[in-house]
Amino acid sequence: MNLLQVVANSALLSPQKTFLVCEGRKITFSQFYERIRRLGSGFDAMGIKKGDKVAVLLNNSVEFIETYFAVASRGAVIVPVNSFLKPEEIEYIIADCGVKTLVTSGEFSPAVREIYSKSPASLKDIILTSPVEGVNGRDYFSLFSGLSAADVVISIDDLAAIVYTSGTTGHPKGAMLSHKCLVSDVENSKDVIAVIEKDVFMCFLPMFHSFSFMANVIVPLFCRCKIVILRSIQPFTKVIKNMLLHRVSVFVAIPQIYILMAEKTIPFYVLLLNSMRICISGGASIPVESIKRFEAKFGKPLIEGYGLSEASPICALNPLLGKRIPGSIGPAINNVQIVIRDDDGGELAAGGTGELTVKGDNVMLGYYNNPGATASVLKDGWLYTGDIGKKDEDGYIYILDRKKDMIIVNGMNVYPREVEEVICRHPAVAEANVVGEKDEMHGEIPVAIVVLKEGAAADEHVVRKFCREHIANYKVPHRVEFWKELPKNSTGKVMKREIRKMIEARKKQV
Image (cartoon, rainbow, N blue to C red; front, side, top):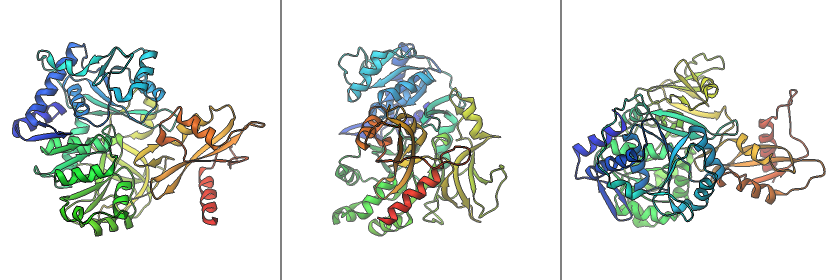
């Protein structure tokens, strides 16, 4: 089954049932199917063909979801763009995969104007859901007025989406996901959380994030459930209000939200009237104590899972029914294998600590236009995740560490190398190293250690301001420390582990 068939099947089985609710607007499954067919015809009239890349830079909205599936309906490839990125980061993505069309809105006017002025070679059209002054773009809503286009033959093995992940080498990499990758991930995970047709989901996490879009859009679409769309998580009172108003039963969020809800004073009527059936946490690990406090307060199961964009993204989940172990990410989902391996690639027995490797139809085809990076993580059909963990006798998996240096800030991946390269572009900086520091509110925060050039001057404000000009705000170091030198081994490699130890020891002394 491809993505268009998923939509068609839901429209056939539940035509009059409400699928999307957004700011008072309601769309049924049959209306949604009709709209993406018409929008797809509009794309066809623009000359968008099978295999063309269409980027979407929008906040949570009906238009985001319509664009995603309308692009898929034409056999084209959707490229969701992180809405927190700066123009030069977006320009890189457009150039890297040859984006032909960008769908965006006036909410991103400064970035869109800058991209438009630079006219990336591959970019032929900009489609606007709301005007951007100075940008001659096509009106999104005008694309619905055309005649139906001929169907496109779409194989389940065709490329459906390219999801960009922060890169260890300074640039993000595009994980290529086929229709089979995405649909199989739904089929393999939906039964673990026992989704039923009466369930109501609420999407307030950013739709560009692979976890959010899979858990909050594709799963409920497949299972013919209602989705309540919120454009933002702020203010959080709006999340609570809509949860009660729409009787949300499946609540999907990142750890920081559950930690906040566990600690925050909640009005008694919220606890009394909440209709949550299951709560799912993803994007990063959540402390066991926070799980216990949340469940004690709300009386609802909080289930932790695990995934990564390269695997569409869900790989493991604690089951709703049966044994659930707080602190574990649960066993692998149906039809997905997770094996713990040593440094030589050998499979480890239960209890052994090593790298998590994943195999299944959900695993990506590779990184777009990057065979070297692909070969480093895809070996004999197995995806080497870079995460360190162990598995018990019952197949329950525990994440212990990350082989990679990735930092997770509020569920968003930050790779130190990317931030380090930006800092080193500052004329006063000789060397820079970025590490993650545990933080109760954000999960982790990036901390930069900077060595200045001899005779040069800069302070924390200068370095952070420079970073904000070039990278997304969530990647900007929360703290900048200035050291005379960085600890290095005999070969001159910076020892990140030693830096972390020194920072941690200093915190304990305070």
